[in-house]
Length: 456
Ligand code: PLP
Image (tube, rainbow, N blue to C red; front, side, top):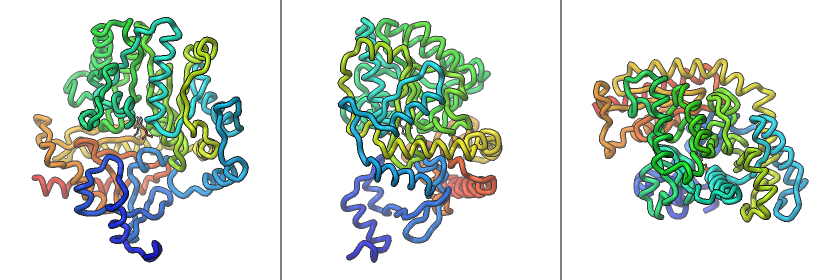
């Protein structure tokens, strides 16, 4: 049958037969079949049934300027026509990568002046760890090998990135991960790790877990600490204001490099251009991805401090690392256009000044819901944590999959949001209007009510 004559079921049959989806239980997918998306515009996506869904997740936290922006398509087309591909391995460069590297460094702290490109956040984190190891070798301290990450962190799915991540099912999915040179500490998750404490005191306590781990391993053995400014996949975990200054101080005290993974937080998610600005952090390595192109094409950037770059350039010789698509011209051209739109339309400023306070007020109002034990947000990232018992904070049994149930109820009513564990997460595009927020939260409440009825 010609594809154009195929109905939803036809697509689902082909999908089941051949397409393995990321992070998916395929046995369960087979029972229902996937929703088949066909078109996107603004904050909406339509499926083959003609149903319009609000994308309350901006894709996967990347479609910050919304779907269907012609300017990005035109930027891609004109770059492809002019120079569709260019390798940068053999003393060749091209204008889009140079312009993007210069643009990014002009937006970042003074010490961050060098950019390495990849296609994904996972690859960026691979680059960071190889770079850190290389740096300490060049600095004459090869024993500095250990990398400290955090529980519930998500840094990607390749071997090292999954090791850095602190999500147990990723570690049990085979492959000897986490690697032995990676260890994890508890994270700044006050509802579970410091309930009832004064937030400022909790921030200092949570940071002290890093110091404890460094001392346990021996500072001379610790290469780097990797963390997201605020954790999205971990369930919208937003640290108190005292956390990051302490982490920064501890990293400097023990000469531990700080890798800040802003793959989700970069380009406006926190209501600031970057998460490090929101929390006042100055990392040694900064990871950008996802919304760098608003998801129109795959691209990530590893931005490196002068301290590391100087040694790499002066003493490193050839650094045997790179990807065929490092600095792909079309991806870089689209990123430049995306940044221009974010900038000229003041989408980040508007998100921070107008949308984020409204988003927070709406989210906070859910604390009265019988299922919601905790509400967390920063900028346009928010989470509603479902509990079985609000007084004891007891969770529902894992097998209940209550978050997935709630997400399905949202989808039935036209809202895509997701369960990270039992936390319902929202990361709407930066172009969402106040009226659209009202609809999002009306649906979220209906979905929670339906879930409460089912599990009550
Ligand atoms: N880092 C963070 C903080 C992420 O949230 C993600 C993906 O969600 C990644 C890295 C991995 O990025 P990618 O899926 O592009 O490999």
